[in-house]
Each structure stands twice: as C-alpha cells, then as structure tokens.
Amino acid sequence: MRNLKLVLRYDGSRYSGWQSQKHDENTIQGRLTVLLERLLGETIELAGSGRTDAGVHALGQVANFRTKSDIACEKLFAELNRYLPEDIAVVSVQEVPFRFHSRLNAVRKTYRYRIWNSPVHNVFERKYVYALEEALDEEAMRQAAANLCGTHDFRAFSSYRRTKKSTVRTLENITIERQGSELILTFTGDGFLYHMVRILTGTLIEVGLHKKNAGEIKEILASQDRERAGFTAPAQGLCLVCVEYGN
Amino acid sequence: MRNLKLVLRYDGSRYSGWQSQKHDENTIQGRLTVLLERLLGETIELAGSGRTDAGVHALGQVANFRTKSDIACEKLFAELNRYLPEDIAVVSVQEVPFRFHSRLNAVRKTYRYRIWNSPVHNVFERKYVYALEEALDEEAMRQAAANLCGTHDFRAFSSYRRTKKSTVRTLENITIERQGSELILTFTGDGFLYHMVRILTGTLIEVGLHKKNAGEIKEILASQDRERAGFTAPAQGLCLVCVEYGN
Image (cartoon, rainbow over all chains, first blue to last red; front, side, top):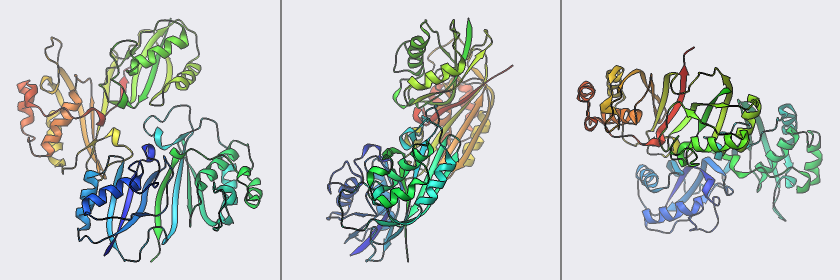
C-alpha cells in the first residue's frame, strides 16, 4: 500500500463544502473520491486536512489516501486534472510515508479573508470577496487582532453547540493589509474551530465599524459565549491558503 | 443638455455582448440604458466606444450619453453602482464637452487576451482566460506579431461578410508576455474590426503551435481572405482594457 498526498485548489462557490456524504459530488471530497475510485478501480478513503464550509475556497488544501495502485504520481496528476471540473485543480501529487495523515499531522494552517471595501463592484473577483462599502478603522482592527493572537480558549469564536473536545487553539498571527480597495485579513494558527475564521473576521469587521472596541476582545474570549463575538462573515470571502506539516 | 462620459468595467460571461436591442437587459448597454432611464426619468441614447462580443469582458469600456438632468456626477456614480448587478461596475462618471462621442473620438484602444497555458486549471479566473494546455513557441509568436503590426488592410482578420467600409487599420503594438502559467497578448491600435482581436489571437496561437509560420502572415494579410487566417479564439479570454481619446 502507498500513501499519496494531494495539494488541491478550488473555487468553493458551487459546492456544499469539502465533506458531507462520502460520494456526494456536490462536495470537493466527493468529487475527488468518485474520480479516484474510477481511475484506480478500488475503494478510496480520502482524508482532508480539515473541512471547508460551503462556499469557502482553497489555494492549498491538502488531502491524502492510501492505494494499492502503482500508478506514477505524474500520471495520476495528469489524469485528475483532465477529468476534474474547471473549478477544482490538483496542484501536486506526491508519495508520502505511510503514516502521514493530512489532518492529524498538520501543524499550521493559513486562511485569508478578502473584504472588498468600495462602492465599485469587484466585477471579476466578486465570488472571492465579501463586499462591504462602509469605511473600516484599520488601526482599531489591528489592535483587536493583537488581542486575539496567542493561546486562548476560542469557544466564543466557534459555532460548536456542545463539545467535550478542547476549544483551545494558538492563533499565531493575524495580518491586516490594504491593497487598494481590498482589505486582506490573514490568519495563521495551529488549528481552527468550526466557523472560527469567519467569526474572527466578523468580530474584526464590527471593531472596524466601531460597533465593538478592541478592548472588548479579552472579555469576549473569557466569556466563552458565542453571542458576545461578532457575526459570521460570509463564506465566499474565505480561502484556505496553505497547510503546513512538520518533519 | 449635458454630455456624460462613463468608464465601465464588466464581466461579460453572462451577457450577449455590449449591444443588441436598445433595452435588452442581456446586454451591457441595455442594462445601463434601462437603469439610466429609471434614474433620470428621460429617454437615453447610450453610445459605447465599440461593441464587445458576447462573453467578452471590459476593464475600461467607455460610453457617453446626453441628458437634461442636472444630477451631480458623484450622485449618478453612486446610484449606478448601487443598482447595477455585481458583474457591471461604473469606474467613473464625468461631464465632458457636448460634442464628445465615445466611438467617433476614440483614437486608440487596448485589448488583452489571456491564455492559460497549463494542465492545472485556473480555478479562480477560469472565466477570464482561454485554457490551452499545449506548449506555445513564444518566439515564433513574437515574430508573427511583428509582421502584423503596422497599417494594413486587416480584412483577412475579420468576420465581416461584405462591407464597403475601409478595413484598413493601424495595429500599433502587440506584446506577448509570460506570467507563470499565463501568456498575455496585448493589442494596441487605432481601431479593430469585428472579431479582429480574436482572429489575430487565434492566428498567433496557430503560429505558437507550429500550424502556421510567422512568414505566412504577410501573405495572409495580402490575401484579404478570412479562410487563410487562424481560428477565432474564444470570447472569454478577451478583455477591452482601455480606450484613449485625443484632446
């Protein structure tokens, strides 16, 4: 048995996310599983580094699966790209050690959230940005972002109902960068809870609109209360940029 | 009466082009005309710098219309962007001399054709590029492009059936630039015939694939025969970048 790692890029607009039912072709995982099973003639269990929500995009999602096939990586790369729809691409196929697992071995993930901050529509990238016309106080957002970084219980920033699993995560860095009409929020951390990046973004936007202030962040974290944090920013502005692994 | 100039940006994917019937909302011109007439309460004749085909995009299309309204340009700009669909944007609204005409006074136009030259789909910009996997001989394309530049009768490079109008145009410049997996062809000239940029592109692609050679270009021009030139490259890779006017 070999273990193959895929790096994937997709426009999530018309999918119901990475995962739901195994062979559901409305999911990225389902599309890939059906295609891999046809190409390789065996049952495939495709593990992703994590789920992306309906409508969320990826520049560098990582997945892996085990196979009895001896197909060359270059050949599988070409075949996958030949038969995948135009909104999913395989960036690389690589044989990895048998114990490698795309989710369990991930040590760092980077997400990017794009806010289109102008009355003039972004006609070409409108499906990859969240359009918000109002002026944003970027300095206040950066202060709030600084208060979010570090190791915290991020329960207030997730949509979990009840979970016994730890909701402690380390948010290493948030950068807030303006490029013309666009405000780009980049989040790097060791892992993210369900909806966490979108709720962090929604909270930062509310700070930028002066509906919340940067000083409240610590109280919101301490409250562990989802109601205290900001709104869940729309999926379409979010993109999983990359997943990193240790040696 | 005032004369107002609009600079427009649009994703042409779901439209049947710039113009067909005046109030056809499947055209860019129709969408704008209907909206302008509602906003201003009068009949509007919106003139574009030229038609763009179904599926062709624009970064800087120019149009103008005359109006009795005294609406401020800033207000019209805001209202248009508020009510236009997400795939059309008004970049600017400006009052211009009464005699200005967006088509008749245009002195130079620039078009860009994007070729996505990779087996890995361009998932995010797939609607704005023409995907072509085969290797292209860029040097041969540049030689052919040099033979196309200048003042020529471009009848062989247009889809006109019969026309008594002149088919002589001056193609000032063609640049062919590689940016990673993308090959970008930029055409600047004093005017372009129907389908001309797409046929120029198709011909250059055929040279890049060694189906034609750069030396044939002069014969094709001289033949005035559409059959001698290359295929009409798909609309979706084409974008009207800007229209320039004299003083």
